Length: 223
Image (cartoon, rainbow, N blue to C red):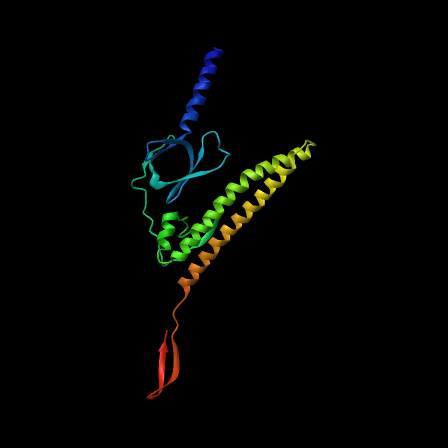
C-alpha cells in the first residue's frame, strides 16, 4: 500500500513538472524547454527549467515559429511578429545593458543591421558605433577571465597559500585594461547618440541682413 502511495505521489509530481514547462519552437525546429516570463512586442523573455532563480534569457520573435504554453494554448508567432522600421527622423537613446551600451528607439534595442539603416546617411557615426561595440566586446572578453584569475589568486593569498605574483599582476592589469576599454566603448556610443540627436533637433534659422550692393542698400535673407 505504501509503495502504491509513493508511486502515485511520484506520478503526480512528474505530471505537475511536465505541465510547468513551456516550449518555444525556433524556426530551425529546435525546441527550448523553459518557463516563459514575458512576451514583449519583439522578443520573448524566459528562464531555463530548473533554474527559476537564475538569469533571464531572451529570443527575438522573428526567430520563433510558435509558443506552446504549459496547460495553455499554442500561439503562432507568424501572425504575432510586427515588422519594426527604424525611424530616421526620431531621436534615439543609449541604454546600459549587461554587455555594454545599446542604442534604443521606441523602447526597443536596435540590432546591428537596424543601426546601419539608422546611420545610412551618417557613415561616420556607424563607424564610431562599430568601434565602440568592438571596444566593449574586447574589454569584456579581457576583463572577465582576468577577474576570475585575479580573484582566485587573491583568495589564495587571503587563505595564506602561495600565490603567483606575476599572475596576480598580469590578471589585475588585464582587468584594469578591460574595464578601460569597456568604458571607452560605452562613452563612444553615448557621444554618437548625443551627436545624432543634436543634429535632428537643429532647426534652420532665418537671418535678415542689410548689405551694401552695387544698386544701393539691400536686404539679404539667409538660412
